[in-house]
Length: 201
Image (cartoon, rainbow, N blue to C red; front, side, top):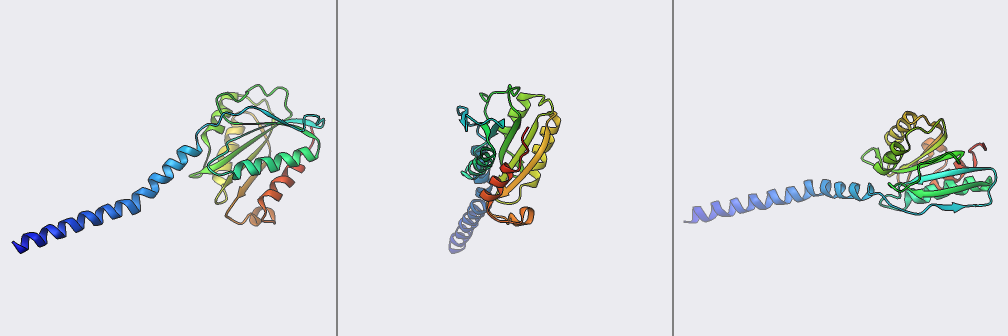
């Protein structure tokens, strides 16, 4: 009788140990998957006009906000740099409602957070919907916890396949040292300076 009770206790402990291992090992991957799903959900927003009186050129900015506000902050910092040189900037998020007629713009700015080494799917979907960029000057801004070079490479390939002309790729991290690429660490300063450096049309 005691042997059976002992065997039952060992069996219960094994089950508990297995459950603990599953929770500790599998659950984080499930959480990561959920976060990636949330980060890749399209966000519908109106087109906002920044510096409506700007006369140097017109830029159209399309970005995916992501889970945190880091991508949005970097995109807006870049836009501030453009505005400092008197660009008119129209900005919106990537969704099925984002305008695809780019004929009135001089510059396209695409911003995407990085998830699992990939750019956010709504931005890629938007590029696919636009189709042919007709050689349009294009800036890519990718963000992430690390240096999202893989994400930037995928974005660059998509822009090139859409016949866009890449004039700047900006890879920014909120955790990894940005100095490796830019010599300074503050991503806001890097993004603003990059916007200021874009040549006028």
